Image (cartoon, rainbow, N blue to C red; front, side, top):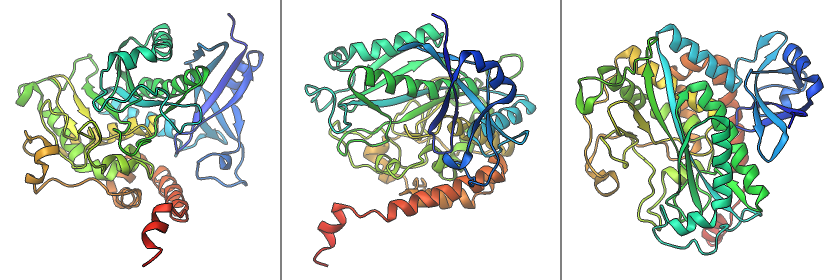
Length: 421
């Protein structure tokens, strides 16, 4: 079926996908001139007085399986002939270029988790999904086969090479995996995957959410990242003769994450609810599967960084709210910083951090709330250096506004616990 319309889209600083529906007959004009938007209407640091912001389509398009007349196109933002320096996809492309100038290609894969809820988002979609340890539950997976299979079929059709899907550790929670790629491709696919999951869930009468902690007593939605660094000859530079088969460069990369995890938490864990996941008490399954300290181990899922093999590392910090483009930018920034400074990650910790974490006195804790994360990002020289002054200023400004909006909200907990003070 021929494409009749294109969704010319960009992703704003808060990860919201903004689009215009463009008839196929006009798409060449969009490639030449861009689709016009008012930047102030999105989560960008602009005013109503700014000129038109133009979304310049990329060469990649993603047809919608549930509406084959429509295709989605990610775009870069320009204003008056120049890139919008604080727009997420532009920031990522700038960091990819920086890595390229150093002789590196950053390859990544993501593992986004999501819940399938009722149509109104209040209850789990499956009333029978009640096990205390529901991870990999075959029957719960089969009861949502139609949704999961349709999403997976679309990824196969798009050439993403999906390789496994499972029911995750929370009741109603799922994870779907596809092959790794370069950081920009992964970011585009991650963005479209969220569109795909939400749209197909709605088609079946459900609601898919990537909210970090949608249910108080259940495991939250993580977005683990697998990272490797390659040279221009397509050699994986992570493999070497150091511990666990990694290279010195790989340990410098780990050192970059150990050094800057707190500074980057505003990007990896960007909303108020993120810190309900990071600092959660033990869930009904027995573990949160979320780090709250800055540590690394071997093939050990209780640490912020896991070493699952001799060719990559896994960063387990990010959650489902992370902006796909800024998340990849943060990964590249931490890795390049670690390489440039030959950062030493210290000794590997081979403990169960959930059961014995109290024994590690030197491990820094991750931020306790969004305000702490904003302040750490704001003060860090590294975030200005790698993301640029415009992104740094814009993100800090808008996130302070979000925090202040949250603080103006009164909860029932406050009333119940302070009414008789």
